[in-house]
Image (cartoon, rainbow, N blue to C red; front, side, top):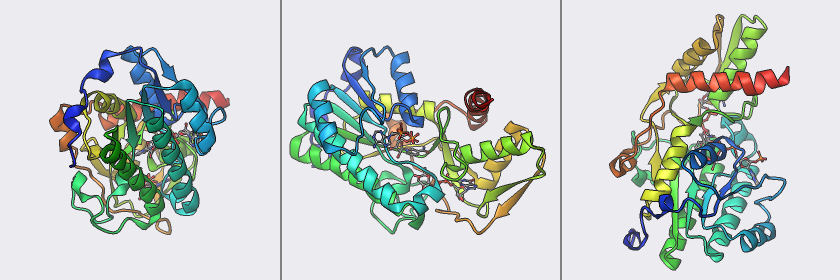
Amino acid sequence: MADSTESEMKLGSFMSDKSAKIFVAGHRGLVGSAIVRKLQESGFTNLVLKTHSELDLTSQSDVESFFATEKPVYVILAAAKVGGIHANNTYPADFIGVNLQIQTNVIHSAYTHGVKKLLFLGSSCIYPKFAPQPIPESALLTGPLEPTNEWYAIAKIAGIKMCQAYRIQHQWDAISGMPTNLYGPNDNFHPENSHVLPALMRRFHEAKANDAEEVVVWGSGSPLREFLHVDDLADACVFLMDRYSGFEHVNVGSGVEVTIKELAELVKEVVGFKGKLVWDCTKPDGTPRKLMDSSKLASLGWTPKVSVKDGLRQTYDWYLENVVQKKQ
Ligand SMILES: NC(=O)C1=CN([C@@H]2O[C@H](COP(=O)(O)OP(=O)(O)OC[C@H]3O[C@@H](n4cnc5c(N)ncnc54)[C@H](OP(=O)(O)O)[C@@H]3O)[C@@H](O)[C@H]2O)C=CC1
Ligand SMILES: C[C@H]1O[C@H](OP(=O)(O)OP(=O)(O)OC[C@H]2O[C@@H](n3cnc4c(=O)[nH]c(N)nc43)[C@H](O)[C@@H]2O)[C@@H](O)[C@@H](O)C1=O
């Protein structure tokens, strides 16, 4: 059953029609903005983009009338309630509720209104806390989740399953990509609710600007995380839209992992902070390790290009130009 519709889907057709109407949901976020840049660079000319205030994707009736009016041909779903370990742990109702609403509304209306293909984005947190490393796609639903983000993970697992169910019942081409931890331009630099990389970049920058002697970093520093630059993810998303029509979700990682302590040292160096690090062990570590096995994507012919060092420098330059200078 699993891949029965795969052969019926026409691979390569996405890149061949640059005037097809594409709805990129969440186009002002980290991922959505990178996907828009990639599509524009690739020559796509007919993107439909709606801000959150123009179209609230949690509203079933608004999403339904949007699809009835616009009738996009392709959909890339990069709108979601997203945040780091603290936000996930503090607002579980939002992380499960908002994400279930957005994805259910968009997936169902996209199918109903004749969208040809949809890409749903999940996250590496869908896998069990103690999954085998590197984590293959087959580890899904084989063990208990990491408690700090299980609500978000359950919503993302439901999204994967919804795409699979519509494929089985309606032979509809809905695919899912599972990115690892991402970073890059347009990230969220909120001091508490963001992910570790933008949080540390901002904290080191502010400490340097204020001549502070130390910076507090959460947890023990021992967890391992895999980081992928968002431009690589955007490239992978376009690749999957064009080259993949399978039942199973696809991991999208860099294969490069560092401990949080190593990451903190790297960000400290890029920012140029000279003080010391202090570890706040009252904060959760989260999952100990989540390196994904991205060999399936590699076997399809895709590999990442941006090194962590280059990516960090580029992101810090972006932060200086677009966040720090705009505040002054
Ligand atoms: N960042 C990461 O490290 C990772 C992200 N991902 C996945 O990638 C996808 C995008 O994440 P990312 O770009 O980081 O998130 P961001 O928070 O940067 O962007 C999310 C976007 O969704 C929009 N959005 C949220 N709620 C609604 C709504 N109700 N109606 C309309 N738009 C809405 C936001 O608009 P507004 O800001 O105006 O609310 C924003 O533009 C998500 O599915 C996430 O799970 C997966 C793995 C890692
Ligand atoms: C992408 C992924 O992101 C989330 O999972 P996570 O990988 O645990 O995310 P994180 O980036 O917030 O933390 C990574 C590690 O870093 C440590 N850490 C140190 N100092 C700071 C700090 O200042 N902020 C944050 N956020 N973390 C810090 C922190 O204690 C942890 O050990 C999911 O909830 C879910 O959203 C998801 O799918």
